[in-house]
Image (cartoon, rainbow, N blue to C red; front, side):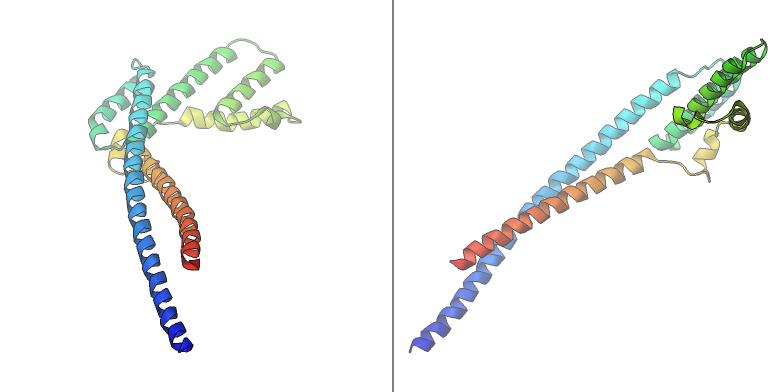
Length: 221
C-alpha cells in the first residue's frame, strides 16, 4: 500500500512543478515583451535626438563658412540643390569637406605671408609643427629626437595634400559616391540598436537567474 501512495505522490509533484514552471515562464515572457517594447521606444527616441543634434551641428558648420570664397559658394549652391536626397551624415560629410578646405586655405595664406619675410629655423620649426599637429594628428612626443629636415619632409607631404585638396561635390554624394562615408542616421540607429540589445540581454540574464532561484524554492516545497 505504501508503494502505491508514493508512486501517486511523485507524478502529482512532478505535474505541480511543471505547472509552476509554465506559469512563471509565461510571466517572464510577458515581462520580456513589455521590456522589449519599452527599450524599442527608447531606441527610437535616442535616434531622433541624435539626428536633431546632428542637424544643429550642421547648421553651425554652414554658418561658419566663408560664402565670399568662389569654391565654397559653388559647393554650397550644389549642396542646397542636393540636400533633400541626402542623409544627415552625408550632409555633415560634405560640409566637413568645405570646412576642411577653408581651414587649409587659411593655412596656405598664412604660409605665403610667412614665406614673404625672413624667418629663423626656430620659427620655421614652430610653423611646421603647428601644421602637422593641426592636420596630421601629430602630438608633441612625435617631434622628440626629430631634426628640422625630417619634420620639413613630413610637412611638405602634408602641405601638398592640403594644396591639392578638392572638396567632394554634392552631386557625387547624391549619386552615391564610391568614397567610404558615414551615414549618421544608420550609425546612430545601429549604436542604439546594439545598446538596446545589450540592455535587453542583460535584463533577460538577470531575470533568468531570478527564475531559476524562484523555481528552486518553489520546487523544494
